[in-house]
Length: 446
Image (cartoon, rainbow, N blue to C red; front, side, top):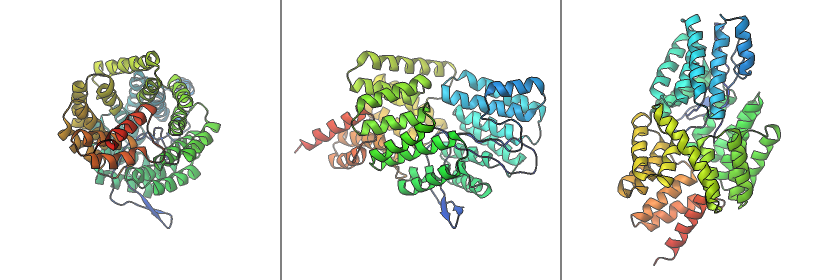
């Protein structure tokens, strides 16, 4: 999954409160209250919400915010809103140059209002998280909470940072506090995601439906439908996954996350060409790495080698930009390098990522890179770590199945393949074909 929920704020001062991306934690509901229990998480981006008590909203077009600042250059709340708008633009367009623009706007807000500026501090935390600088994200979130202990958005980013750093209990406490302050669409979505990571897809779907009901913007509703589609697919109900994606697309036909969700549902139903068309449309709108990788591998599965290489070339170009900027590799870049580049380099990339991000998805990518490099015993330890929470992730199970098979444990491989393929595989066409081929090979062995 991949978009961002809202987090309006509550507080005593007129501060800009903003929602941010990537959240984890565990939440349970009893008599309408949110109760956090021990758990651990992964990370999709959540839709941004409006700041409270300001004239400028972060979802307002950047041009409108810029025009307001031409009239009111000292409006630090609007500088914060502009910074958040730039972060959202960067997320949806895959243009890293917008992060620099976001930082400039947020630092301008902080220079105008250096004390008690919880909104800009939360924005700096969100920016650091978007750049995968999770230690810095935690520091900025803690500053925002010190400035305003009633800012739920700051607790959301704090939870994100703790989760990515592997501090899961700390993340749970932050999510609990966020829900205590405001159990809105953003908080409900975060709670849902925690249950999803633990494999409790039914409970996750229930909470995400509550998030959908609480949603107040089109982006929040689109996000909820994309998540519900993904949850249905992990449960093996590809037709429900398709229905959820199409419901969202009726209101947001150009939403890349919904197009991705529909593509994955169509692929699970065997409608590979239609899935490819949706992934193509999504990458035309936002050439994000996970979308480019899905498109390229689908072209490869269809035998369209030239078109696949076009997607792969763009992925290589993006990775070159990341490397030159000194950025940390994400899981999509690691998996791409492992499968379509140099597995030894993929191992090095994963090791770099793990130094600052001991997160379950990174453990899966590291496991796959190690497997592709022929280091299967080490790979198995990380594959186990990736699935230790009980996450129902078809790709991670396929990865571990291949590792088990390489180590000669076909009984364990078969169990993981059942999870990976299920009633309708939540895999792109290339991975689904590879998983089926592995299953057939194991089935023909004595």
